[in-house]
Image (cartoon, rainbow, N blue to C red):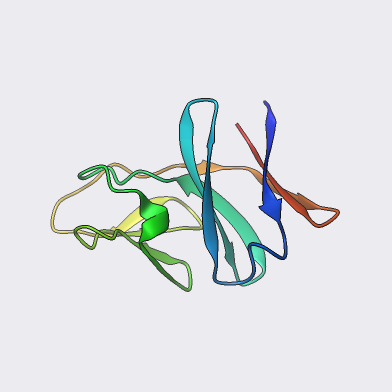
Length: 102
């Protein structure tokens, strides 16, 4: 697995999210309650970039059609039809830097 730098802990403060492209994958990284989580950044319904959506607690809402996922697990929480889960990636925060493993 490769470790990819996402940013600094000060750039991704609590309740904030960002994204990175690594190994051909679009990955969203967010700080939920002081813990960093990473999941896919592309909505499995219509392809929206989820970092443009809204993060409330651990719920991530798609900016296009309102689908919701649990950011901590990558699992779908709500949408009128079943969508593919986003999956998760391992996040490492050390020495003030945030990395994702891909």
